[in-house]
Length: 257
Image 1: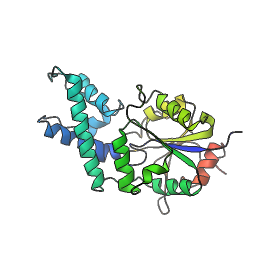
Image 2: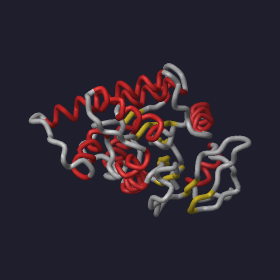
Image 3: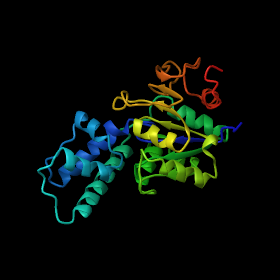
């Protein structure tokens, strides 16, 4: 039987509620700076999350929701510029400490680090966004705690394609059976499971109703002392938070151990 060698973390919505409180307002700040009257409210942004990747999300918005907008001749450069501005504003919000980690995330990461567990980031957000979140929450140098940072356009096909998980596993020289993933959305679960990686889900307000078929466990958050997690779907467990012991038990199909 394979033993657990690595924890693979998605970022947006999994480590922090970055979609609602970070990316969405940063997009709106970029639009305003560019003189556009676009405003992505929480309801609209929830629909746009059907598409992964910031540049892809802008294109989807124009194709499906703002179809009368006259696209400039150099549309690719236009989208790239908006996304770069959005990343700048997102980093600014992070530096101001506006977006904390979700309950239990820091505890699990610190415990895994102390135990010598290998860790990686597996996300569609940009590397700059990953750095901004980690440094603003876990401190300078925390990016080095993760053996691999798989982010942004490192693979052409983004989640729900399995490519980014497959790339990460190759970089770490691991088989899918030696890792466990942490995701928050249906697209993320399809990506991780498509690569053969067992997956734990912690939902957020945008993803609670997603399809998490095949996930090993679905909770509302990772849980901390005084704030136990709540079951959404999948296996029961006697644990009240996702500490390393609980994760190892789920990995070994012994969720009640």
